[in-house]
Length: 149
Length: 149
Length: 149
Length: 149
Image (tube, rainbow over all chains, first blue to last red; front, side, top):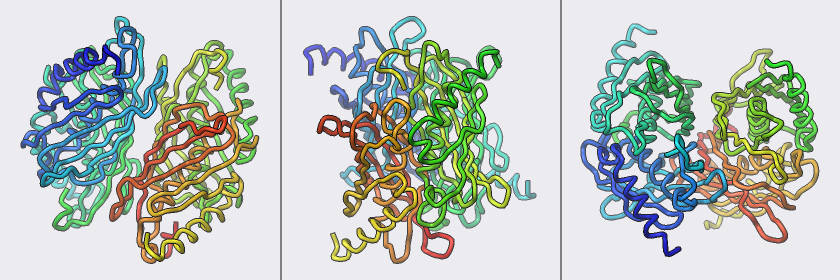
């Protein structure tokens, strides 16, 4: 980890937590390290679907944000920025529990595209159960007006 | 469309609009027809990311809900229910605009899996621009305790 | 279609049909138009799996080639080239029949990424049945040594 | 590993290596353990694309077969069989080298669906380089006439 990384992590955290939708959802940034971002969310009625599970859209939100942020830790942020190109999500178990945690990790950084995977866990009776896995492609763009993402 | 379909559509609409997360996000069900569900969402600061675009997680939420609901229109609802297995989203243009609309359509219904595609449009200056495309796999489950999804 | 397109189409067809793997598989280029490429393959024992269906890997091969080629029809080929970033395939019906046809069509061309969808049909008793759908992301690269793909 | 597993592994290997397409491609089954299948392929002109890389369709073939076979190791084979529902592939580096190896591993076995991930490596100068990652959904079917896959 370079000397400058704590400032990078702080900048990314500030962007994520300042998003209108992040505040609405009530998610938090748990940790940001080079290539790895963890975000989490506590259960409350506003983030559930009709059967009391966390809504799939909430899981997708965490994956969308955490994978993009993880890709953002491995670029030269002075010159470049990141934007989500695509991702795939598999929901593998019902997300019944009291807290969702998403861990996104860069699989392969690239010049123009970074591939990131993610796992989402749901805490049930104190233990984390795997509820979703994802694979994302994040594009790196040159920073200039119109490419701020 | 069978005589019973309006009742099916009303039941699906009630489930979707009763979800805690749907109310938080502020989405609406625009229409439900056999094999096709349209949902939409108006712009407000709470559903945006840091640059004023609709958040990718909001787009994913619409796709998650609309694709699952579309699959739910083509099953025998007395005996079966639907649950999202997986989906893939491509974000193809910045979603700057004042309203998001997601149209999900069944590509291939199946005994145990239904494949659904989705397109998301963002209204800019009165015209709808394509901002995302998706492909989803929805599982059909027998209705019984523990399979209510 | 520009006056130059027939030459572009001929160049793409030559590349595809000259690939070692295309010759091994025995696939053919049916048509190349701006944004749309169709490839096909006749049934023979060497392209099947254990139950007499076309092998999933053959379907993936057609999708891989046809989506990339379709993206290649919408770039400035003097300056740029294309390379597959990723794709997702849903196999929706057993591919029992005598001929596979894959039709790939550009959904959204972009500066650095083009999104393409594909449908694969299997001819059964003279009619084409949908057996697979796909969604692909193709990267556009500047032509230079090392980027020839 | 149960006492019966070597017989299961032998049966799966025989199915894979007996496929017409596997023989055409020239792939081999390297190992089959509970939840993990490794397949490989040596470089020869017939499996390449126009620039001397392994063809993307070859990489997809390995992923298709190895993920399905991995899912097949975690079911009750007397009563059930497996069929590929869908997969997503990211090609992360040019596959220039002399041997491709695909390692597929079950992420989450399920009653009706098993999720499997895969990594593909290309041997360059004696070292394995990551060239592709994938995430697959494999369906479990009851064994009966028409479901043999």
